[in-house]
Image (tube, rainbow, N blue to C red; front, side, top):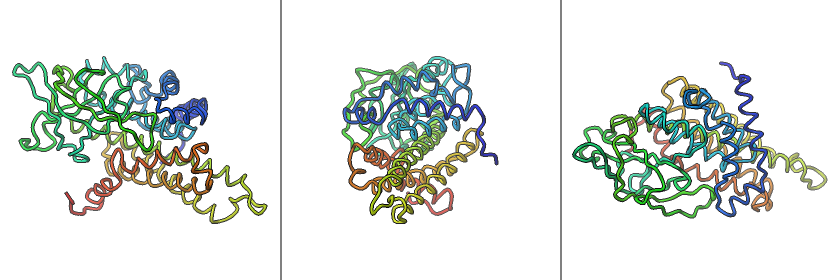
Length: 391
């Protein structure tokens, strides 16, 4: 197993790090305070071509893999963007872009993938309040017309990210009621919807963290979508496309968490070296040093798990277990690193000026999204350990 990066991979990491360094902590604090989307940052990212990394050259991409995209996200997050910068990538390249790449018709790919490569955002509307993690029980319904030319969609989606900023939404809806479906993963369609639309209304949530990225409830009423806008042309392939997309997006979130955890660790280590008590740097005291070492080890383990899962993904190998392991470890390690950094800085760490407070808030959300740690553990208990299913 070779852990050396190629020259191209090193360049992607270095270029991404350079972009991150252009935006100082004050920029991110201001965006967080004002709940503003970091447009200037994403424009710079888009201009650099980073969103195009995992897409074929024929659509304007770089023709590389998910692993190279993860390198870019890791550099962005560790370089100062934290999860605020990292969390935009799932909404552009991963959620919408990879869904279209893996499940779209040739015409859908030709229309939309060049836009994704240029940084256009495509949101994924999947979660509902009643179905939660069991997405097969979604209630949003797409009723086909008698002539088969269009569908009318009605329903409500919850906790949908960057729906206001997105130009398109990949909307999941049942075309066969759950109770009538012979196989519960059948009868689900992914519909490409243009936004804004008078038939989609938004109610934006106020959140503990991620202030610069909107999260909304979507009410879909009488939305008519032509059959040509159903991903792949029919409702037969949505589930494998969703599985593939969710695996990729979880790895993007996971590497963003690792980068953010390391960013917090960098802040804490710098402080522990310079802050003196009783004429000694506080980092010389084991009570301060040992938690930071434990965080460092946890983040290193998470990175290796992510790299392995990404390799499997890029080689078209089954990776659901490895992706779950990576996400589980990354989130726990990143939150511990953020928490340890806050503790190291003491009262300063709790102040917004330290930036650790913002990273702590943001990483905390990853214990719940894009899937809870408990549901991840439930999946691993069944798939990795062979334990009986609990649901």
